[in-house]
Length: 229
Image 1 (cartoon, rainbow, N blue to C red):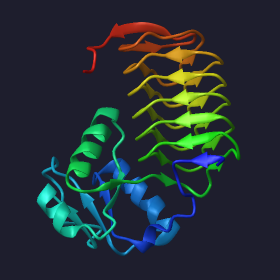
Image 2 (spheres, rainbow, N blue to C red):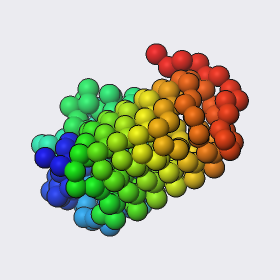
Image 3 (tube, one colour):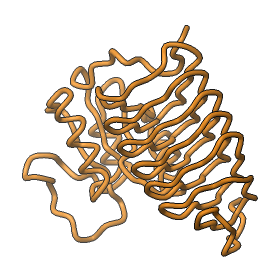
């Protein structure tokens, strides 16, 4: 099968759906979902924020506890990640899975996905006008924001966040939980270690070690980060 791990023909309106998150990026995910299928059986989940009303846009319930999630879920129990931060995405995925939920991907209709050798893990969020060429593996929970591109033979490991306009060349590998800043460029053959952050507008010309922040053209390490357990 050319495209593994995701069914592009899935009808989001055929089931109850929860968006994990209820603020900035969650609203963008909702907008995408609304344009695709105008779902009526939809709720948001946010167990952290204290400044939200009971319903978003006066129509969609904001669930506060996992008990409310379990009561609200329909028979197929699907949820989409509506937050950006890799650590928070992972926490929400684990929390809602433990409540019986099924982690679900969402891919904008305008995304161009190659016909061969593409694997998308569960829970990917791929926003408008992204391009994946050929022979690419994208792990669980990866976020590709608008207008990102990934070149051939690249591997994007679990829970990476690609901010808008990221350009990833061929034979690139991003370790788990990496963040690439807006309009950053990763040149061919580069490997970026787990949990590292690439600054906005940076051009990465050589391998970057894990648990660091790198910025500039060419990108240089400016800060060490605590290792994520």
